[in-house]
Length: 216
Image (cartoon, rainbow, N blue to C red; front, side, top):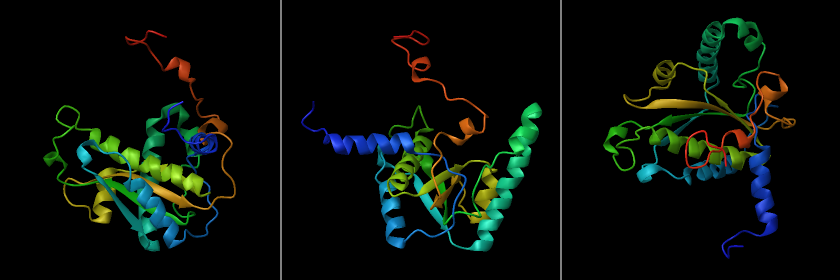
């Protein structure tokens, strides 16, 4: 055991948070105290980022009318997604894919503008800015679960439509609409599994050794 390891109790708590994190769609209203929201955003801000560029920008949506407009943008993409799914269209339309009007807080996570100036770590992999923002969202997600709050990542939207709605500068890009707040209970398994939409694949199918496709 490493001298830098957490205590058994601390390790168990970390792994529990990871295992019980859920992409929530059902919320019970309520509110998130300002000091708690600040703590969650600070956890997001502590995420790793390539070249320490910290590309994340979080927009808190407090205007209820604006929240409704965001939901309209999401609904438009939900319909287009259903059309693209063909034979699974009707099945998809029965799924609850967002909780924008039900959750306590809505945050839009976006990539900063002028990202092309950041070369460190991005010369051959420019998408590392998106990976960095994803790490920040995951930090926020895990911190929310620890605090007993649900969070859902909504990605059903046309990015430019949402960018225009929120007044993002040229080059900035919204990546997620995050629904955050109290829930009556957490799903015992991912919602798409419970709804029969998909099944999670075991880790053993996704780990190779030395070369692609070679199992350990």
